[in-house]
Image 1 (spheres, rainbow, N blue to C red):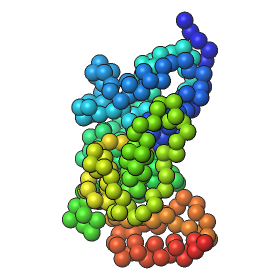
Image 2: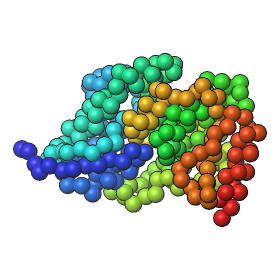
Image 3: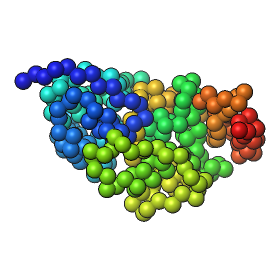
Image 4: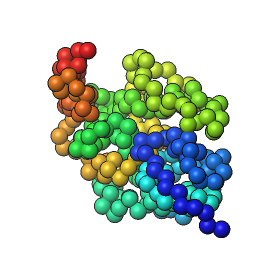
Length: 270
């Protein structure tokens, strides 16, 4: 029977564990472990139901496809009904325009979701999303450039480090964990276990093996309409007037990047 209406707000940039940690605080009565099981090992009929999952590699979870939005849900829905709602919303947000743009970039949908999840964790200002997506696409498309096809994306390292550190954490504890700890060493010095080595984007060229978080439509759109034409290969967090405002300085060469880093460091000397 129908239960009370529950308002659920999933934040963009959350990973599965953060979503589950939040859902446990709502009045949804579904079995959380059933929800986790469906996401981590989606049944074939669920994958077939959504055309955007056609490129999902065998054995992959649904990380990245749990669309971040505000929902009104029936408090008595089971795990499958909740998951269907998130996936159906992802399909609605993945407009024909975004799909066409993804194809024009030479990506399949899953590759675009992986890239959009990194953009989601890196970008703060909406106007910079296409530039940041462009930096990563330029790196991927020109492995002969200075960057050698390496994404050098800190969020992929944060994702893998947290995955490893909390591999034995109970589902009940996921909401108490800090999942995006700042890196303690330079990106290329981060050591990951072999099973997570694909997320070491300072060492391994190309995309990491999975999305790292749930991207919103703006980040999917940024990948579909990435600004590759500006020729940027680098970016660094800016600090105008001594304030971190989410903006970045972009550069075409490593020499320009070093100058931008020096500029940002002088701005934020404190």
